[in-house]
Image 1 (cartoon, rainbow, N blue to C red):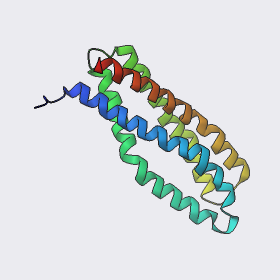
Image 2 (image 1 turned 90 degrees about the horizontal axis):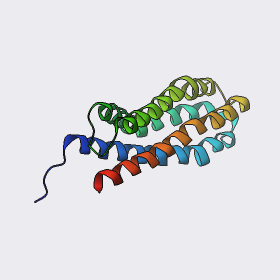
Image 3 (image 1 turned 45 degrees about the vertical axis):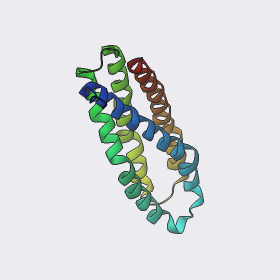
Image 4 (image 1 turned 120 degrees about the horizontal axis):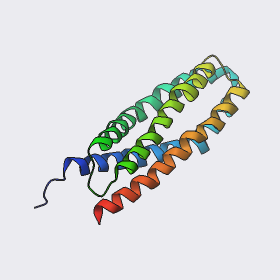
Length: 151
């Protein structure tokens, strides 16, 4: 029978899974979904943007909250193989992701909710690279941390 994981290891595992999930989502959004906004058509764009916002929130809200809670937890208690610096770097990257989401991407979606605007759309695609790169780096970091803990 397997012994239960220590809480700090379980939190690291949950953080790892949530990060990998969000990295997959953000790459799909960056390469496929956001670029296709310009193909929706002006007549139906407002409805499309509203649906996009609601459905995307339904998909990412729980994983983002799990990722945030576990990243913060790991700053205070972590497996012995994980340094405080590694935990804080991971949390800092996540902090920038959340700030980018709240202060860059959400306002751009708010502007787009009134109708398609090419400049706002291009700014959304361009600034979303912040989150795409940081979630990718978090995936690398969390993979490294998981490998350290598994050794």
